[in-house]
Amino acid sequence: MSFSEYIEVFGDNILYLLEQHVILFAIALAAAIVLGVTLGTLVYRFKTLDTLIVPVVNVLQACPEIVLLALAIPFLGIGISGALVPLFVKGVLPILRNTASGFASVDPRLLEAARGMGMSPAQILLRVEVPAILPIVIAGIRISAVMLVSVLTLTAYIGVDSLGTLILQGISRMDTTPLLIGSGLTALLAITVNYLLFGLERLASRRVS
Amino acid sequence: MALQVEFRDVTKAFPGTPPAVDRLSLTVEAGTILALVGPSGCGKTTTMKMVNRLIEPTSGDIVLGDTPISQMPVKELRRMIGYVIQYVGLFPHMSVAENIAIVPRLLGWGKARIDARVDELLTLVGLVPETHRARYPRSLSGGQQQRVGVARALAADPPVLLMDEPFGALDPITRVRVQDELLAIQRKVRKTIIIVTHDMDEAIRLGDKVAVLRAGRLVQHQPPVDILRHPKDDFVAELIGHDRLVKLLSTLSVASVMGDAAAPAAAPAIDRTATLEAAFLQMLDTGRDELAVEGGGSLHIRDLLRASTG
Image (cartoon, rainbow over all chains, first blue to last red; front, top):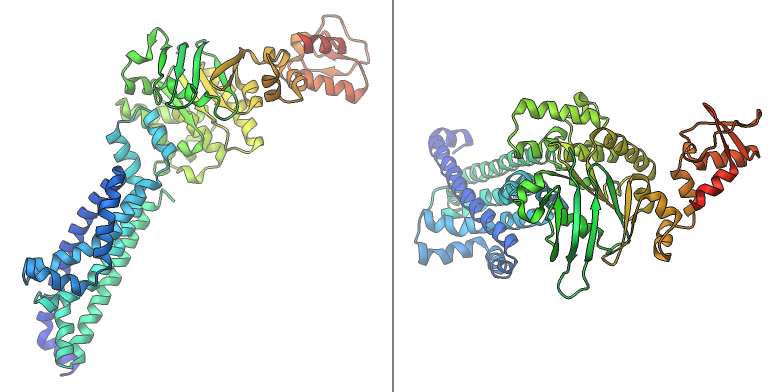
């Protein structure tokens, strides 16, 4: 089947898989952001947590994705949750690390100036710390997002529809057309996400740097 | 409006070290500038930070006007006290106007009142509201940032101003200019100002009185001229430096020691408001021992000798 024929026949399926991929990506990234920012804040506020959380997250980070997926099957079964949980976990570390180091990079003299002017801790957090760390946190999110877009293709191995399904199809049938379409769209998605978040990062750091 | 600040037997001890501030008693009269000066670790910054309760004293009390600060709510106290630190104190993600508006916003002022106040303050510190209010701190020079810092501290018209090494990050030429501007602003606003510095020259230039601290103790607390004339001990003399008497001459004006008698006809002229240092240099330069003061009167080298010993 030629390239144009393939698209004509399976076009709807390709769009469906792309949509699935984007949905999986959005859920995984949102979960990684919530967990990463929360843990990063906790790690910064309570230094002792550092020694507890960071090694665990580091080990999970070092683990190959396919191993995480395999390990998750006995616990979470085959399907969406089995696919998502191990993957979003991989997205947590860059966000956690950047959140914690972002907080640590705020000049303590600025915080003292804020206190000296009579700001409450909540006002200091919202008006001084958050704007200062935002570009750094977004940079972490960008790293996670780009990684998640490509890693999500692996979910096809445990039966979850995504652009990985096309790649798997291509490999098993020795057919380069779906292989190229699947990997091409994945790459395009990763590049788009990268540039969107890069723009956001620039916007947030416009005033700070 | 300005309020008197009185330290009553204030001690601050951190565990395991000698007291950072040791039984300090001194009064800063309303509307005057006190320069706290001394080497690193002498307790000057600790002393200042106890005024806005960034540090709480171990014993003793600080009284603002009639009220001991320990009896005032901390936030309310801090919003009554302008706080200037080295120019890192400006928030980089806020525009000049937003930085200045911080305390008025905390106090719940309306937008129109804040906008008017921002423009008024920018003008006061010598910046043009139209060109500067929307800019960000990183696009300003060190001197401009420092001026914005002063404007921010004055925003809610606080009776007291605390300045922690405010000009430490500026080059010497800019520093002198910004110091002069601060004095000009002070003539208009008449705040009670406590300024911390390790630079004795700065303390002498700015302070109505200078308090010299050493290892948490108050060594000498007097107007600059008296400290220059009679440093209490070798420590104070060393802080001032070997050119103590030159500094004294540069602190005093011609008008403060001149005589009424008319000068000889050929005597070179000098302005009444010139410093004695300038007069002395003119004498050395022209080889004359007497100058004619513009507007009548004369200055003889004997007057300088009298001035140097008080």
